[in-house]
Image (tube, rainbow, N blue to C red; front, side, top):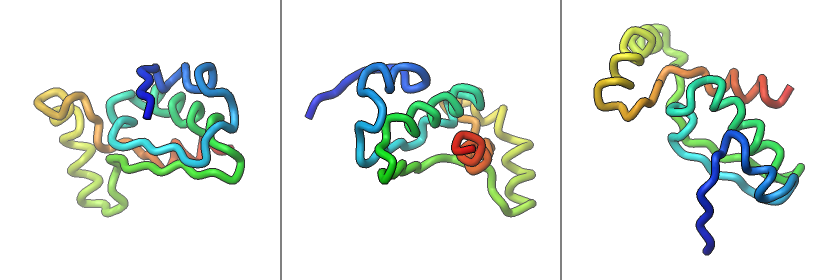
Amino acid sequence: VRFIQADATSQLVDLFGEDSFDTVVDSFSLCVMGTQGASKCLQQMSRVVKPKGQILLLENSRSSNPLLGWYQDATADAAASMGGKGCVYNQDVRAMILHTSS
């Protein structure tokens, strides 16, 4: 096992090359990158994973339940700044993925 510290929004392709991995795994990091950073990270992941590979995400995302989504929207900024380690938990990760793949 080799650990490499890198900026996932800009350095993955430079470090590993395109189509390098069967699987890319990311857990709970997109929410701390902001929408633009998360989109760049998804773009980098999509370039380093092989064409028949997979990207596995375990992320906070805005709920499809209208009441819970409203609550997330109302509290996300406060939660991120008061102990949420900067995590904005109401991002629409599905929309970011669809935008990246188009």
